[in-house]
Length: 332
Image (cartoon, rainbow, N blue to C red; front, side):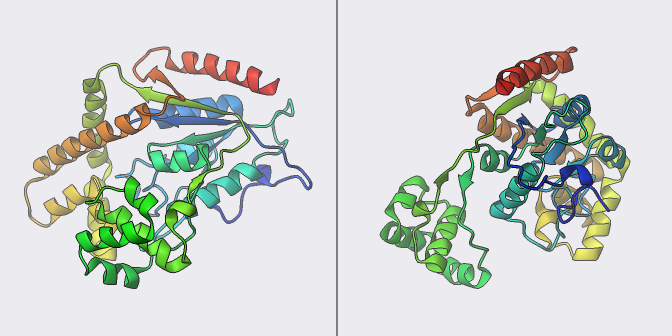
């Protein structure tokens, strides 16, 4: 069975009866193409830990090359979870992700294969900031599934009226949401009409009790990440990104929402005759650079993240030293 499946976990993740031990957590985050996966695998091998993916697209099966999923070889080296856990036609909500991740973290808090009987750490790795925040801060998320019919009715009213409605039923949420933010306005109203309670009363944080070390990877100069993005985009095309997009368009139809995400949208347009492959590649690089900038802004706003130069020749040694310090402190 695929190690990324959350339905049945390998033996070393089975909890010991009566055990409430919780492991330490290492977070490896940062902008796309900063080398998070490679560093995480190296650390997990040394620590005998497991990796939980924090990538909002790697959860979907068949979307592999364009999402830079770990290879089969890499997954054989270290157990990976929360990859390939739902079909492209399904929707995995933030609440769904959080619940599955928290269950895996709890199950990993056991004495297992480590010869020194130490609890192996969990490595939370990825660039989806909200996924990471949901775990690290223990975000309280209303368990309300998307309501397509309700959303359609609300959208027909227009954003101006929707926001006015939100101000009436949940002034606290309205104060946090921009008047032009239709997505969050709709979600707040959706939660209110389904539960009968304002979304602001159902939100908050409940941080976990286990120790967490957050490692951020970035380059000293943004152009260094840009060069990595350029190389990785061309590598994806060489590995079959165009063929992957063509297959997915044929199987699911070009209107599948996931095919409108970064990398897939640009190649889909090329396949539809809208520009050349070279233009699609250039657009993918441009849009990925813009995405990396947004990721950088998100993560840099968190003062608890400790940053390391992704291009440092001794990166692994630097991070390993910090991890050992963290383990010593948290073990005492």
